[in-house]
Length: 279
Image (cartoon, rainbow, N blue to C red; front, side, top):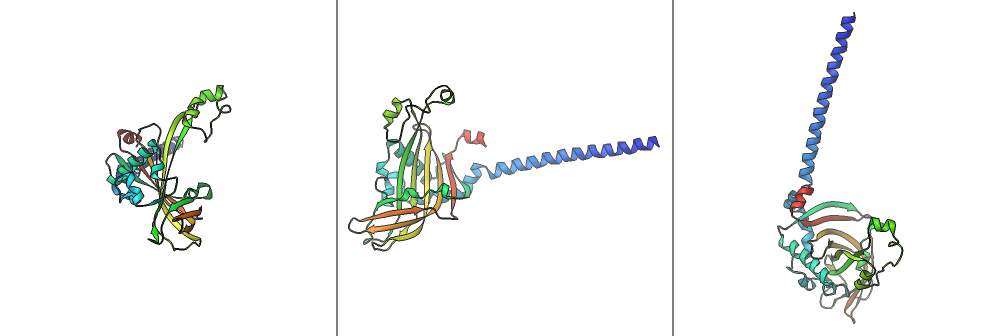
């Protein structure tokens, strides 16, 4: 009886060991399959080759350089191409040229669609005045170009052992020279380019409300002259517009979040060895 019990115990032990080996091998195969799928699905080169990201080039396909955009769009007064800084002009022009030439220097990829909330509202920036003559044409496209530079001061160590986070703070009214005199250094540069789809308006002074789809091209970098990465997007805003025929202008009085709307996301990024390493 003791021999029989030992034999049964050895049998179950062998089965358990075999099951363990099968489980380990199966788990390894699953991991390999997941890695392979991730390498294919998230491969920027494949995403770029499939061309889904080219949808985001729609607002600029009819031009070759940044300075040609005013011939296609009515730019917001005070936020036109001519109002950009030198750095902003370079950022915007570099991005537009790469997009319209389908340059091999960059990947243009689609990143999916994401729901928006009132907290992620991107619409108010459209509020403002735009040149227009509805007597000549009731169809037009609106656009704006706004650049920013973010200044930084200190680091984690200086924050811990000094008062640079609480004293002599800068503000948005200061010039770059004033900020640098306080120890700030220029960091991220960015340009927010917005382009609406074609609007058809009535030649009337009455307020008009429309759901207006728009594209966003948002290049940014962290050093002067560095190749930018651009966020590309498409969404919709609920706008109220009024027309002043005497002043030949359209005023967007409100531009609001649309409940249930989403944001289609794309990216323009440099095609380099660093991208391969990141993958």
